[in-house]
Image (tube, rainbow, N blue to C red):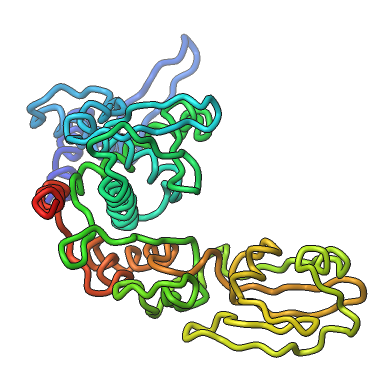
Length: 364
């Protein structure tokens, strides 16, 4: 219908100029005759190209303006949502900064998990970070004192706004807005077991399974048990190799290797990580080997090549609790943060800081 209308309009235009077309005089001696078909094609092209613009102008209720997106500052919202203050001792200056809880959580998430991860994974990380600091404050009595917490991996990595701006540069605004959204939408929420905050262990990448708490640490925790984590194979941190000179290995482990290493005796945990290994007549735990030789994980294989020992590892981190790349993989499949934390922390509940604080004070 639309095409026929245009053709009809063009037909009228052609008749207006005459069926024989018309002539344009260029100068006193030269004239150009324009045929009707040329008029038809030219007019049709002009109408087709111009009609959408005319329609927008006629029916638009608002003037056409250039849209410019300004970054939103959510720092005041983070402060408003924080009923607790965290005293952070800065390792660079030894000074203590008083940071509102949710602002502290946002900084930890920004420092501990890549901002380009899925939003639901960042929310899960926010719950882990918030749970850790609340548990620490309750356990140390810091809610009633001014005891501080470090800004390093000894507790949780914390970077200030200035440090994050320097680290991220031009990407700062979109990254911090995304992280602030994850923190604000989960504000006050923590992970609990038997109405108390859990130890929300997390790490970068698993070997395909997480580790039982008692297989890496000494204590068994009912919510830190081995679960499948197949998403981790897509992590860039999944595989790694480290070559160490035999002399350096001997020094770090305080042993003397008199024979070539050839399939040493090893035992394994439920998740396939090294539980124990025998080297030079001594028994080491997988954790001891990892920490003394600075390996990425306790899932490792050993191969001696000339005067070096090559360690091939799977995964990155201690393996207990939530895998960050696993969480991101779950989010990519459409899982929300509640499903993510429920998968990695067995039998937990999502509570609020106020509920736990009241329960804790009542027990005291």
